[in-house]
Length: 275
Image (cartoon, rainbow, N blue to C red):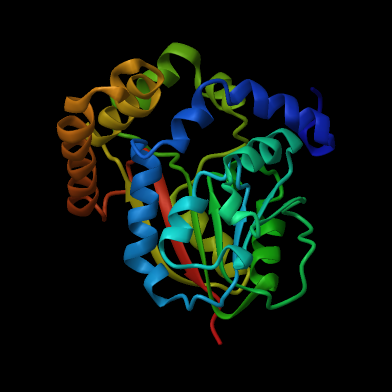
């Protein structure tokens, strides 16, 4: 597809469709560990402090997998905006929004040049977005611009550091790091210092940089999200009532115990635009 700096919308649609076979359907369900962890962190650190009349922007909204949880946290549909660069992603998102939630705004947009006025949103979500964009510094500056003073950005991204013999490390051995990242559309992975520099250069106050899923939890996440959710096991009562709650609980516990160790599957960042 050539230089990613010159990708068209159709290029991104093709890349999205290649990555999404089975993946986005799995993420829509309530039994996706990465999704549930991100929402747990979002509720813990943020959503309880967001008034119902404030606006939330989901950048790279994909299949709209987080909208149901945002609405469950008493946010009004008319105050939720989802954008994605891919038309294919937005078409899938539209099919996942219920008739009651049709006031949610979905639009095609480029995160590098957001089509919103300054100081528009109280919260921006950017889950697994920055690692797909060459000009991540430009994107973060745009996030800062459209956030209200006192607003928060919550972002997640893949970690560049992993425990030896973890699932990502083994995938690197099998496929090669460059090949694996190209397969999923990554142009980089992040470590703590990269993120501190990225956010502070744009003016953000960094509240928390949280590594998650270190070793055993990374294997559990890989088994659940990449294998079990793509099979019929997810419909099994024992899976839903026993395996998944225990697996999610263990992942949360391991993350809490090793929160200061930056060898992990992913990183969650919470940053604030000070008033």
